[in-house]
Image (cartoon, rainbow, N blue to C red; front, side, top):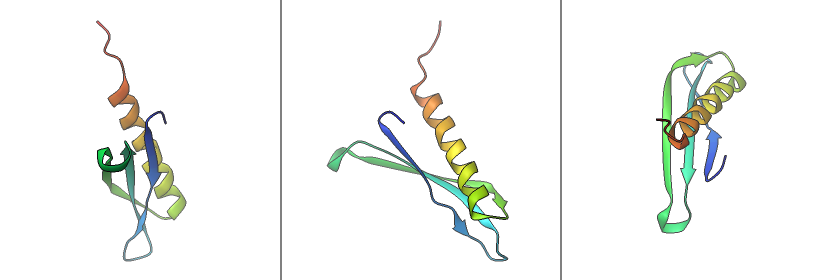
Length: 70
């Protein structure tokens, strides 16, 4: 999304559930940054955790890149 690369990276939890987390990267080479956000809710499937993580990551990008209105 623009200059950001958003990737879901769910991780398995004990009991068969999955934690949602997302990586938001920008830049290249030594000027690159990578923010990883982990979320509290857990999910019954990998796909649900990935979907939630991507939604949250895209929301963060939208908020970060939004032009302030006066």
